[in-house]
Image (cartoon, rainbow, N blue to C red; front, side):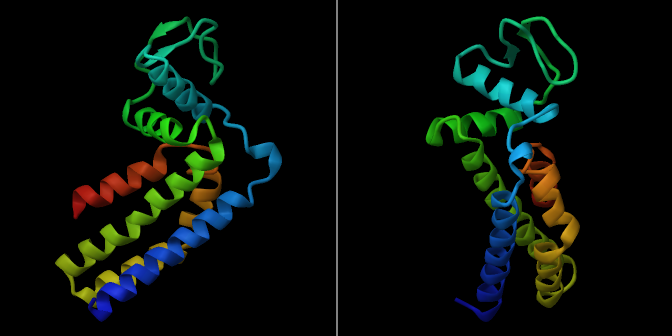
Length: 164
């Protein structure tokens, strides 16, 4: 393994550790999904129940009541991701948050690839290191990403992968 690859693995490991630490220190009142996160969770459970992207009887409790049945309120990728995590770990929010923290940390690897392609390998390492410890990204993991089971962290990973 080259020195650059060891550095990149270390940077991604730091990113994973910081994000998981943030998720594990969520206040108890913020551990249940609300608003959009509740909608994503509902869609994931609907997928697991074989109903596709649809609201169960009683509709949605996300922002306003919606009738039961198929919906296009949420894009399918993130609910499908949650459904996959729930298939492996059961309906456990903590497991979903930790897996999502790991996935979000891959943003650092893709930023390395972008920087190395468009600049130099040292540029890629610097970009990855900054993203690993950048407080808004960790805060985003804490409040906006896996902490609240929202799709934005996965969007960042997919966007960075697409740009790379």
